[in-house]
Image 1: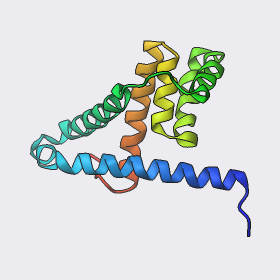
Image 2: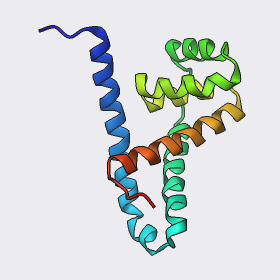
Image 3: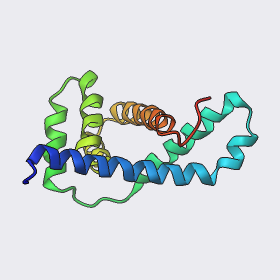
Length: 138
């Protein structure tokens, strides 16, 4: 049976998401003793800070001339009103992966959108980690 294009894209998006969740799981396990020693009200903050560091490290990965597809995506997203740009970037994470979405966000050259994108990603990854029972809700 031949797969259609949309189911292949969905499978690829799930692989990308799983990969990112696994990397975050490893990082959280590395700071687990620190998290367990913290007061309950500080635990969520520590975990979110680790997620934020991970995202910042991905963003700092040097990129030379961005590929044409990244420039095209950025050009399309820049046409949206600012209130919709972050949502478009979040959708891009699940369609093409975190690294590509971060590249597109950087291409927008809008620090406010980039900050809001990071904040939204931190919250979404935290919720995903709770949902996957990788961390316990606090």
